[in-house]
Length: 141
Image (tube, rainbow, N blue to C red; front, side):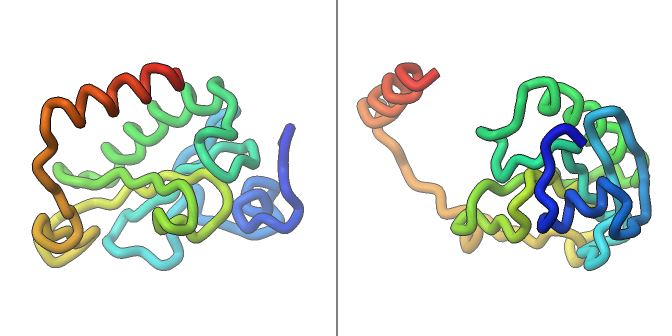
């Protein structure tokens, strides 16, 4: 592993220090079953490079991980699934290593439980606000 953290749980899994139920692996990515799944087939897909957020992750790892997420999602056999990736503690990131959850959704009661009224607090945005946000984001790209 070219960039790792000896204290990181996921780096230890990549190194083989901690065993896992490996689903799929490439040169840059590793997919393994989540040990506390919210549904059958819940899988973690991680880069083999220690980065806390995707902002810290080299592009070649990001390019590799997308197709791995797709293969894992298809391998679950579920026609519906969530792909979740959190960056930062307030965004619900619990392990400080980039990871994607592939969470099969076979019924309304398994997998990720979302409620548009509770967990998706949408609001009406005026065109002027959206235009200002767009300009700020373009300036940062």
